[in-house]
Image (cartoon, rainbow, N blue to C red):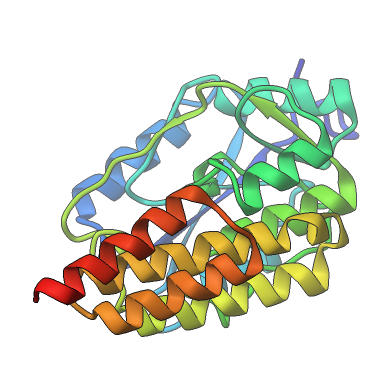
Length: 262
């Protein structure tokens, strides 16, 4: 089943593709665009330059320019399955959800957990949103997690459904994800992400402590790898003061031992 417009024609889906030649070769963009053209539902493609503003602002510009009810997002280095949008539209019609992503069916609470502190990552190229029911924008102040914050807000506003096997993620040395982020910047961005989720997504409140335990443990591991043992011990200690966890304790003890022999 495909969503129909008032005139009986199949209503197109606007597809927003942020693009920067700094991070993605033009050949990969063309391959991504070909998977949009191959969709089994009508599409309207918007490639938005994100050189100066970043992907969050580029996606917001696409939302503002879209003239259709349904809007999808595709990273320029990813590829869609040919029936991606068709299956998502069917699933949204069945469930009444305002957002559809890749994955197995789950409750809203399970979705919030998986998105905030679980294994749900790299969601952008799976997003299909019904703008009649979702009025959310990407947070341009974030350099990481802006897509997760967006789907958390959209899901708790209008419901979420999932379909399996929607896209292929392609990683390459020029991608924004591959360039990495310094520990201090990563920590600052992650803390702001956690703060915004706590403020904007009440359903995530039960998992805030889990988020910070994971964050401080991850930062502690990064510091230990860099030989910054005192700093690593500090962050492992912060994590353990929030909640005891055997893995974090093991990292702390290892850092203490390595500091002693270095």
